Image (cartoon, rainbow, N blue to C red; front, top):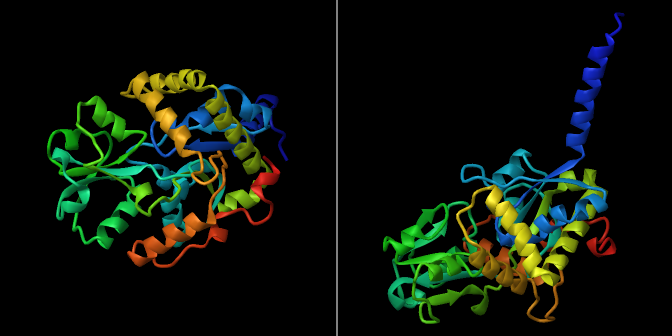
Length: 323
């Protein structure tokens, strides 16, 4: 057997070490581009909370052509943020997931109609919906009320709506809602339908991993969740400093936004994290909301079967024991 030359052996060791380091790193993909919606994770990275927890994390944002759900399915990331309805859809389609941290306790989706009209009185309206998902509850609502909306897909921002192409658009109360206000759009309770106020208060953002990855990296996953929660708690206690960190990510990625919009977004995101019943930031997935979302999606033929709460939660050790 021929011995490897020292420099070859050294090179192989370096490659091996790099591969080992990659295997030990959680690639985390928020579901959209850099913005205050993900402030807690940026804080956890910038303030060293992940490092202190002994977990290596690399934040990689998605693209229009490769959204977070696709990256999760293909293994390009080990953790991602998903809305509860998205997670239910993936599980029903055969991708077992585990929710390791729930940040949203309330639904942020609204429908905004043009020309001051009531969204529920616009049958057959052309309504904007995100091409990367997020609109499952809106589809359920429109079918329930027999609105016959024509869904027009858009990638991002509010240009189609502002230009008059659409009669109404879906929006998030922390994002497009404020973009429209900055664009000079007149918004009042007459032309805004808030899903959370009409029986659709289903949780949104949570952090998910595939169940297979979670079972093989359970301790790493829970340490990541613990540090992420710490990042959100720090952001809530220091919003302006958290905003400084957010803007560094925004500027690095050259995102077309501004500090005023990001401040409004962070304030609304932190409000949505407070449970309506307890007034506390609980960081837990609610079984009643899983049941509600799953039932609505099954009734409206968006999924073929109901997804149970137990299918989305770690079944070996409660997350609260780590937090």
